Length: 403
Ligand SMILES: [Fe+2]
Image 1: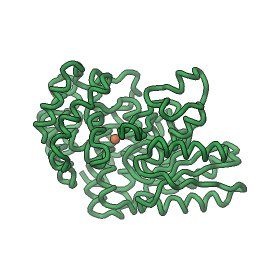
Image 2: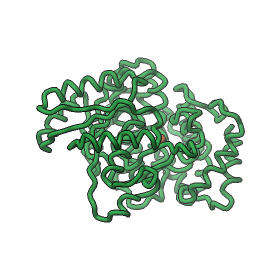
Image 3: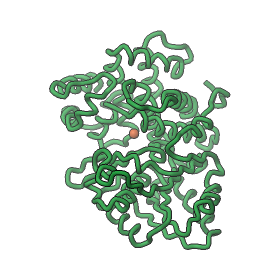
């Protein structure tokens, strides 16, 4: 597939999303001005990360140039590290309480956006961050209350956090990443400018794009998700097509603007997908690799073995065949061949071909199989449901075979 293939219709798909107003394109940030006027904004606070991404260096000054035309000061807090912890969120919560901004703008990758979502929810709900871990804790405590939502300007193309109800935060006591799931943290606006990704280093381009790819594939396979948007499956297929066409091109020529556009669109589509049809075992098991391997590489290595396991379910086989011909020029005839083509694509881009390529000690397999039991709901709602009582043995067998 050519990177300039005319079959991509992602812009109309981004417009379909009911939960976040998505403004996409190289002039997206300029439309922030119109938003500030329309919403009669009188104060704003910007959250951003450190300097780990070259893209951030371009996005932040661009936004501050924009804010300089406003008649109010825009304070910023730029100390959000990768993999933010509960302590980081507490510090951000104090800044929000001091500044009392009309709007909060998160500029950065998934870590910054997740942290800003969590800090804003903590202030709005009056709850400690640790009380927010779990599903809809804040909404349940204050039924019917509307919380203020943040605005996102993503600078990488991976997590899709700019449109999801999720925030991953590290619990320092257990050194484990914990998840906040809350519909009211879905950002209100996402200003997605693919140009901010042009200066991403190669490794970040690869790991973020693989994360987005796995979001889209896992979402496609989640055939049992309830109340999903009717277009969610189409968004996922589109995201997979975009990444399979654009990732090799962006890796070969980082300044390829069209490829960056496709990767940005695919990442946002991936976020839209997993809001509706969430991820399952590859993402669940990836949490055990936290701190040792970039998230995108972990999920990319875990996808093929679990996907092959899911193929024991006929409905998953059918869903898999909808991806035939995306990863291979000659359309595959069996679901097993589709999984093999996807694995070959990941490896051809420089991703892991086997779990052992992640270079972790082999003991991580048993730990992963044990850790997964902490989330029995994910096991029972996976595309091929697992009974928690026997899940650990089955998971370990799958992981050992994939080593
Ligand atoms: Fe992910």
